[in-house]
Image (cartoon, one colour):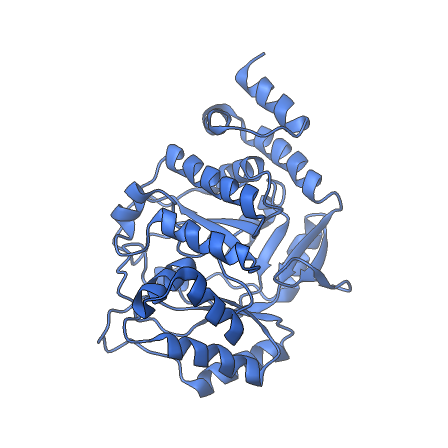
Length: 356
């Protein structure tokens, strides 16, 4: 049997693939074969022809950041004239709009702001929870690691305080590629790969669910992507705390990394192999924000079962010149035209609106 045939046998008998298998899939598998294999693995997790989405809004509480990531066109350094910290009245208006449009959560992220102490974050969370009934999916592991250092607290101590103030779950931002060799090149001031994983491990043990992401298409190669998958899979084996994986492509415009933009075919290949390698993370999300509506729709044939967020507001990727917008009605149409039933969900992938 060829390597590809052996991998097919593994997939159809629901056996775990290893790093060598992943490399064979990268190098040898035809695109449609990847779709077929990933579709089979998707049905193992989600036998019903349903695709979910969440109605929410990205709120960036600040754009001031000392990380200086080469791939980010959104941040401003401390003292910059365009730097901001969100005003409570502006925050309230954004949340009110979100709720009025049927939103169920906010994605609350900012930068590594050196002048915002723990009291700011506690007050921010309490302010939201005291005024609104909404899920707070907030603060990436890089923000949490930075704040823990700033506050001279352990990750566990910090998370316990944030949870007590109203934090409901953690997004998987700041992962980029979980290989320090790559992180040093693109985001040298961010936490290490091990620290990112430690934040997630600690969160999971405290009962906080999280997502996981991967930004690819910059200075990494296939071995780094595979290492990223394996690190996530190993942690998931221990904690079962990741609800979903979201791979997305680096957007080079307006950034300090000058590379050729990742193609749609390359994105679909990585999406499909993600589904095959991450055999213990139940949900795989397409990235219409970076890929646009048609490729995201096609991603549903490459193992994905979730269309992500309606994203009433998005600033970070938009700062890199990518401004795809999709209202909820269009997301539903795209899902249904691909042959699936569209269902709105909450952050934990519970269906909350069976009529959509």
